[in-house]
Image (cartoon, rainbow, N blue to C red; front, side, top):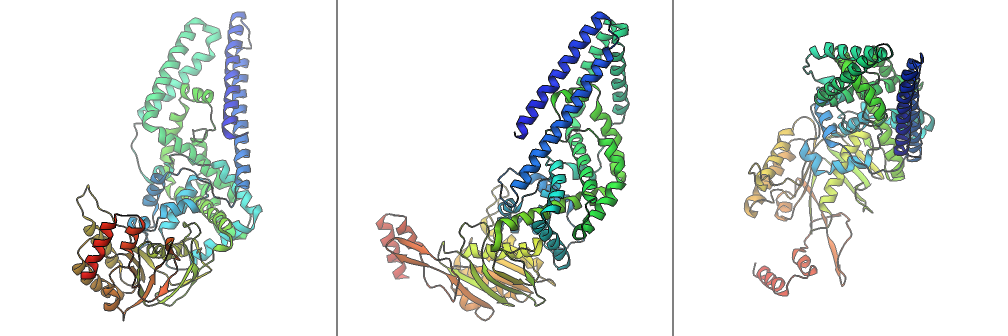
Length: 576
């Protein structure tokens, strides 16, 4: 049985319980039966029991799936808008560096994030994204993360204890909890008193129906309509807030349960959760029963909530205390999310197996020593090895030979090393870097910016970042958007400049002139292809030296361009 089947079955039972209550009420009213209220109360209790059983069954199914799918990749939709919003709100105030949008896009980090992300909660998904956007520049925090990752990977008992609490919390499709915690918003408190009055009036009308009969049936019916209209009108404005408050309730409950798990490796986390969940316990009471947008409440219960305006009244009761306990709520949210994020990394390591390693950080400036390093997004990737010490590289090679993939491979592994202490390599030794790239800037039609202008902007932000901390600078085809004469000369001066300003630079180019101009400051490596009767074959292996081959015309021939174009192009090249 899956979650949808459980929801449908329990909703049907709740519906029949409510119908039974109406039938019983009609019979009791006609016979002046004194047990009218008892029948209605029994129906309500039955609906509550069904809702509870439904939640428990769904948790059991989800927990079973959690254990069965541990270490496996599962494709699912992600709300990048929510994760990016959380990153903007929660980014470290004391951090002087985070991965900018250009570098994130250049390294295809949205795709890699999806590969690593096996979180089961919204705070976990958001914290994993934040961790990957904020590389550490010291090892202390990374070692702490690595201890917890290894615990989750190797200790199934602790992993499952925390996992069941995270599964119980689940994921919210449009999570706005952190926005509520962080931001102030204005509400009209006159509605609070109106909702209290309408809910009480409806309750009195329903209870007194057996006494006053038709008159109060009409009043109860009118109040039923009025309350539903008020509920619909108000909820349209604050529904996302109410749903998020319900999810916040689950977050606090989950934090409290996890805080009781006794293990020295996660003591730092459990102590924070214990202290903060205790501090904000008043919010748990105020938000109990609010919709958490996780499918655990059925339509019958929704109807009861609407006629008694329960969500709206709880909303007003909780918002002031949320502002009061804002600091503790932020700390609780991030701590719970980080546990889920680190468990996700442990699952990723389990999935990737022996094909990953823990990095070794060295104090030497501007060092990368990578053995059999590869890109985790490339299927059947070819591994390469490289050693760089205080000297960057100029990478030449033919089209499609692997230059851009190699640049991204180094960038991705540098980022993974400094965020989740994991590299896709046989071994990886590195310094700490600020990671900056200019690989795929694009024309921006809406702003009127040309490709060259976007390239110039991308390079300028790298130049601006050069300073005290070493910068890993990765550039693909510098200034390809302008003419060859200006491109070569400007590129030479830029690469000269950044080489003197505490950077380790990897640049790919088709301009072989740069290898001669900068041979004293940069090492030269290249990629190339083999040509045989079957066409072009690439080995994707990096080699020392400068590539003298060109394959642009060969590619045209391989794609069966008209022979006239091939022949006349070759004639032009011979004249040059």
